[in-house]
Image (cartoon, rainbow, N blue to C red; front, side, top):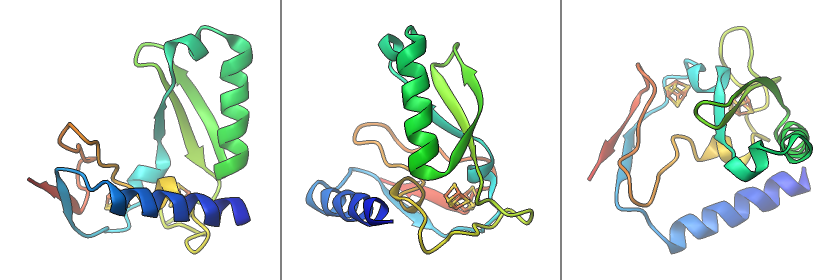
Length: 125
Ligand code: SF4
Ligand code: SF4
């Protein structure tokens, strides 16, 4: 729990210190689509090592309560889902959700953000 709070605090601090070019507006429709299949980029160097890939998977699974669905070697993504996603798509751990969830949709510093189809958020320049 402390780790989650610390992670959230650091992430929010960095976000306010280094604002991104694009802004996100709109609101979450609580459809839960972004929690069903969570894609995380993994560096090719890590992916080529079974040991490091396993280490990353274990770390993410432990830290966020996610579980691995597949390793997408083509796009170099680890694909997770979450134990806290309810049948209705809503988060059952909303108060303690990690920073990766609080900061979704993620804002890249250079690219315009991309949203899942039907998401209630959109980007402004
Ligand atoms: S996909 Fe968009 S609208 Fe749906 S839960 Fe995620 S952030 Fe909310
Ligand atoms: S913790 Fe909640 S918001 Fe985060 S992925 Fe799981 S269900 Fe979604």
